Length: 456
Ligand code: NDP
Ligand code: 2IT
Image 1 (cartoon, helix red, strand yellow):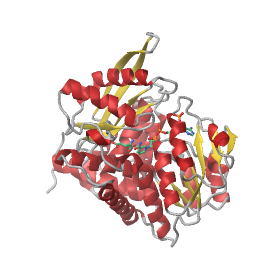
Image 2 (image 1 turned 90 degrees about the vertical axis):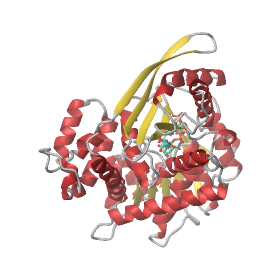
Image 3 (image 1 turned 60 degrees about the horizontal axis):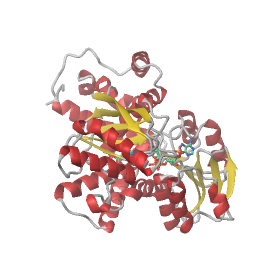
Image 4 (image 1 turned 180 degrees about the vertical axis):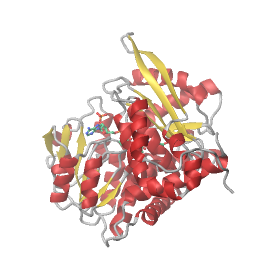
């Protein structure tokens, strides 16, 4: 028996909710974009289930539980003092502790972190593991900073954050600009302040609680998901040309797995432009990507000097290259209407998002109208946070699983997410709308949990 409330909300009106949201939180375009997409997908199931409207689930979901902002003062190697802003957005913990990454990038602001935190609720729900949604980070720019500067920044950041997180409360991880090195400095500071060794962060080093496969997991998961989509049309990666954007953690994992499955990765990209390598990025070229990303320069153009087969195309994005499959793995809104038209014109059959919200709404509409296989990040890149969940499980049990065990679980989770999207997203013509499927499946679990648990 569901608890009844006397809310006067009877039916969801997406335009009205969006108008109110924009009025309440103006100048947060990425957040509005992410919320609108989810509301449009869930409108029908929401209105078919009156217990959601009577508990006003939608207005309770789109507003974060709390937003922490704090000052992060730190000193550079010359002794000059800098001040950045730190954030943690604890969005929803109906199905488990708050969980989500930290992003260090100069573009970080409330709008970007709210969109990421909001999406994380549904992504984490899709993994089937007990994790709520959160995101955090800072407008700190790691580019060009020394190791010691990164360490001092991470220490100053955690000095503020540690009291608000914990292994059963809120478990941060990496995202753009936060990898194994940063997680190390953050964890060391937490351990010292809290006087405990727990799974308070994921993406840890293997010697101090980390999980095998976590570094590769987002990229691997994205390719597992794309492979499931391809198999619905009797296709696979074998012999396919693949465009990848970005050259960070996610792009690296995706490139490795595509190559393993017999595909050829012909592009990577950075803020300076993209590399086109018709011979394919495999083996030591993939290892070199990591070196590039770790360098203080943080640009892709040196690839073309290192490998003769690579051509650097300055200031452009890889979506103009003729490929069968596109995996955007860099950042939000990096693939727009024109890019989508190019991909379709060139015969691309599948677009699977490794990054969060990399395709604009106009680009998604073009993919779907042309019948492409298209998967949103909240389903396709969920392998990263899913493996974070597996890291938390290992930490709780105080054991370590083998590489094969973690990879098998990850693969199984990605197949389940795919199935869930198909179950909830197949339309009357048989086309799978993975956006709708992912949003409905992710939403139902969280919304039902909120109804079960009453008004808190
Ligand atoms: P990294 O910091 O390792 O890499 C991001 C890369 O993309 C950087 O090389 C960055 O360069 C580059 N980049 C940024 N903007 C652009 C651009 N406009 N064009 C081309 N390249 C650009 O981050 P991750 O690989 O961890 O994250 C990539 C994406 O995947 C993000 O959207 C993230 O939210 C998402 N994601 C990450 C997960 C994880 O486990 N790490 C899990 C799920 C999703 P620069 O810094 O110089 O701008
Ligand atoms: O966007 C994401 O899902 C991540 N950056 C990973 C989050 C996590 O907690 O592992």
